[in-house]
Length: 55
Image 1: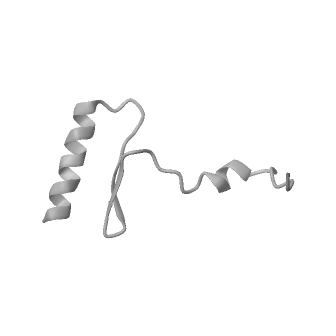
Image 2: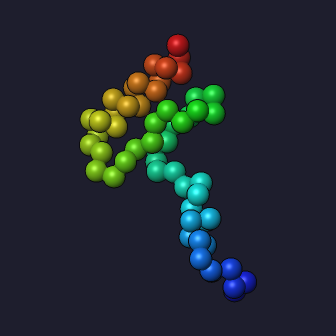
């Protein structure tokens, strides 16, 4: 191991973690799911992002 497991190691390596689904339009994140989100809520958010992308 390289010994780089000091303070802040996890934060540095998880900085670019996203939950799935995560949706971007023109490099702008419009939606990212959250723990406990229902299927219906996720579906509505995906529909909203699709409509915005097609506009």
